[in-house]
Image (tube, rainbow over all chains, first blue to last red):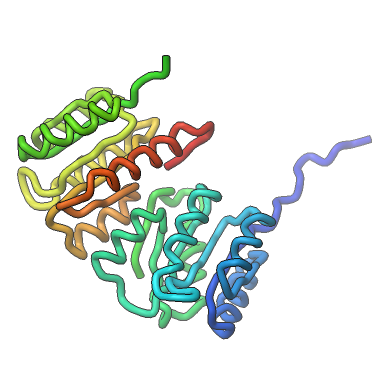
Length: 141
Length: 132
C-alpha cells in the first residue's frame, strides 16, 4: 500500500459580512473566482455562527452592520480568533485619522472604500496573501 | 516566579518618560527608557530584547518614532509595538498601519485604556505560537 505523498491543499476560506445583499454577492463572486470558499453573513449573529464553524484565511467586514462602527469590534474578534487571517474593513467613506487608528487597534490590515470594485479588492487581497509578501504589510485603498 | 515583561519606552519629554515609567513599573513591568529615537535604535540594534516597545512619534524630528517602530518590527521575537502621539496625521497614521504597528494612542490618553491594551497584546504575544 502506497501512501499519498502529499495531501491536497485545503481550500482557502473567506468570510464576508455586509448588510447589503448586492455587495455580499459581488464579493462572493470575486472571491469564488479566486478559488476561495466564501461564507457570507448579513448580520452579527450569523457572522459569529460562521466563526464557530470555519477557519478563515480572509475576512471582509462592513464598517457598519446594524449601526455605524459596529463592524470594528467584529473585525477585532476575527483578528483575535484567526491571527493569521487577512482582516479588512469595507467603508463607504474615505478613511480619516480616527479610522486609521481604529484599523491599527483592531488588527485590521486594510481599509477598502466601498466604491472600489469587488474584483479589485479581492485582487489586492490575493496579492498580499501570496508567499513572499510582508506579513505585516497593510494599506489603505 | 514568572518573568517580568520588559518594556522599552521612548519619548523626548522627560516628564512623559518619567510618568510612563512610574505607571508601568507600578504595574510590574521592567522598564527601560530612551529619550530619543537614536538612543532607542541603539538599544534595539544591540540585541535588546523587549516584550513591548512604546514610542512617541515626534522627537528629533517629525514622525521619527516610526523609525523606532520599524526597527522594533525587525526584532525576533517581535515585540508588541505601540505608538503614543499628540500629533496624529493621515500620513503618520497610514504609515503606522502599513508598518503593522499593534496599537496607536493619541495624547492625552486614558492610562487604564493604555494599560488594558498593553496587557491584552502582551497576553496574546505570550500564547503558544502567539503573534501580535
